Image 1: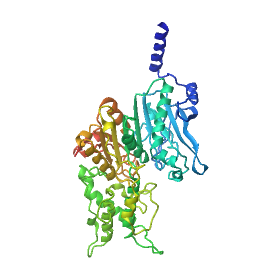
Image 2 (image 1 turned 45 degrees about the horizontal axis):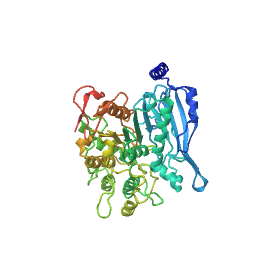
Image 3 (image 1 turned 30 degrees about the vertical axis):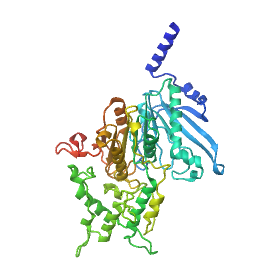
Length: 515
């Protein structure tokens, strides 16, 4: 009995000191870890020293470069094999195990077509402090294939590799990571969370839809939930602009709008919509209340200078309204007018000649019926709305969505439409607000970035507090490099940040969430 009591005391002491089963030796020993019935190997396990971090790179808004604590990193592979064409495949992953573990697990989502094991940091939608620095044990994965480029789809020639990317790998990695974490710390995980954007947002949705008991809290950002339809929507805008664009010497369409015309459009947009949230500050929080009319810019008889040719204003209406088929049915919801529609760079705004990430096209015609028929992909689309098991009393999962209003790749209206359809399926919006919220981020492009936006907010902390403390996230505080010193409440839909009319307009405390 005395020996048993001493053993229990040692366990308690070890857990309290944060040193239970940790350190270089325990980390290295993970290379011996095995899972019964699973073809898996930990190929490397070493301590990564603490880093002070560097200034964020504005050109790479998706890359976290701030400080991190020391942690054990374990790299592994599941189901390594040789596939079609002699290509080596396997679900590779990396687990980050911090010394001061908070007893929770965080799986971070991928991006593009995956193909790379990103550092297991958990920085997405985490504000200034990534999950690893908060004490989460974090896992990342390439979802079953290796690619030199983020949109290399060669792996799709292999059936299993495509299935792994579509939905299999996420769950296999989750199961393995949870076992590895329990082995390293000597105790099971408290709660499990998933946070991802774009492809990672789609992965979060599929987990809530197909594997409802795996995660307690999920954050899904700018989800690539219907890529066939979103590509159709981007092409629709591109074709609409090509139809009114000036022609080059080769007879092909050039850019539809000059830089001066783009500025004119955004200036008029701000004039019509900026102050609807109580203050003219370069941010349109009242997105649903913004009924922008490009027709106000149309040149009339005798009017020159600050105006657009009427055919260009008509093209704006058509492009942003979204595609319809030959019977007049809306096949994709279109895009909102927002301040980031003229953004340049790697993730251009929709007024760019290559909206979203489409290659530049000179097409002036489009067969919407044919494209719409080919658009659905049941293996990767995530439009299923019955989440009764995920949200039910037996599990009580929490699900947060967010979407940049200037995302030219995947329309925020499509994500909102899913949310409202999901609410209808699960008892109505009022009931669903007990376990799910959605946040629309003005000025933000795809997942982050933008020339005028507040794109830094902590939804990881929000979902954790909701799961573990029962604190519903009516809003979170948003900041951003576009406006140093400014903060706003990012309110859950259908509410939006509205200036109270007095107090420092740069301070979030002087705003309230209104419908």
